[in-house]
Image 1: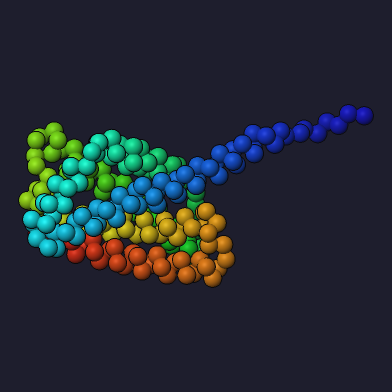
Image 2 (image 1 turned 90 degrees about the vertical axis):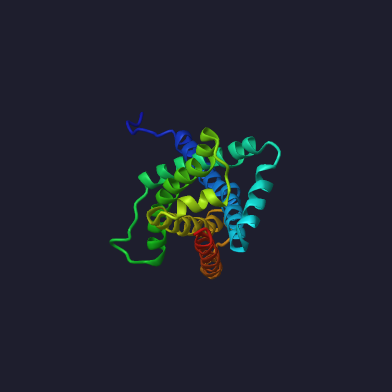
Length: 217
């Protein structure tokens, strides 16, 4: 006797699970390695303004003298950023935050990770246009005076403070979630330690970033 019950082919489901598994890890890796290193490099470069305009200009000149810099920016920054932002937006659309229902700390961190992901994307787009693309189009030299002319505007300065703090949080909290995603911190104890370390990194990089902004005005 033949059964009338329908059987579901598990292969498409398994393929989708494997695909999401790989994409989630690539998303995490793109945010921590190329983009994270790029952000830290930016913070350290901007911090040279604390030692005067000449030191900052020297550092900018050193960076601009790197061979094949445009290609490096495209393949190590632009492409990972597009993937990380695009897949991050997709995850935000299909995920739900329980911050309104459950006031747990991880839910709040998850919520702020989503919010800072959006603000950081807007911030990066504006920053890349103002200090990378616009100078090329208009033949403007990238130096201390250019940054100073932007940050003297109180609204742009406030925007940069919010953007820098948001980007630093997104990066450091992303390290915490990345360690979980990659199975490095498996238990509650190791996750608490990682969270404290990432909080310390957030404080250090956040203070460095905001302090450097004040050095330009």
